Amino acid sequence: MMMYLLMGSFVLAVIALLIRNRRLRHNVSHVTRLIEQHVEEVETMYRQMRGIRHDYRNQLQVLKTHQQLGQLDALSDYLDQLEHELNTVDTIVQSGNVAVDAIVNSKLTLARQRGISLHAKAIVPSDLPITSVDMGILIGNLLSNAYEAALKSPDPFIRLYIAPIKGSLYINCTNSTRGKVREFLSTKIGLEHGFGITRIDQIVKKYDGWLSRASEEGVFSSEITLPLMPKTEPLVRQ
Image (tube, rainbow, N blue to C red; front, side, top):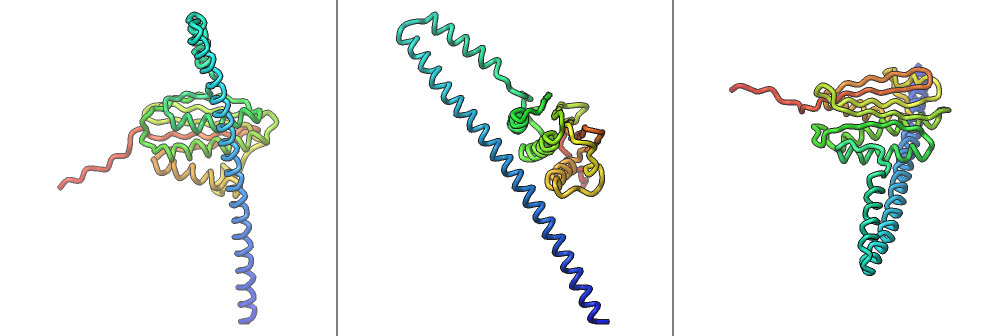
């Protein structure tokens, strides 16, 4: 009898170890994908910065030439052209919040390069009770999940809407999917997206926010509201 108990305990321990190792492999795989995606975003931004630097040098040389030759009218015309180009730069969002603009533009630039149709609108106060780090994690994970799901769909799209509504910051992220997404709607979070979903849930809870997820055939959406007024501790009378 004792031998069977020992054998049973050993088998259970082996099964538990196999399950743990499987989860670790999935987690490592997910982290690796996130790192690769971040590297790709950084490389994209770096290429853009190199292009801007190259253009700036050329434009500066043109301006110097017009100035040295005393061609003031040509100089004025060239400055007008530069101003027009700057005003027509395709910025995906200009929300009013630098941190939000940075993460949204970075994520959606990568999505657009992969042929994902985008519709984004964001109005965000410059001062938020939510830290820039938490805001970046929240929106970054929302868009990363949307990006991964949209890539697998036949007609990929991402729609993002952020705006203050009735004292809260409302965030809606909707994306195309392949079929109907069920794992996000249950209490059990899939290993593939566990990190991102868990971090979103933690941040929403941290700021006493509200979160809803919904899925239909080919479409998945997340809705979040975060209070714009920081929590106040109750006064203690002495």
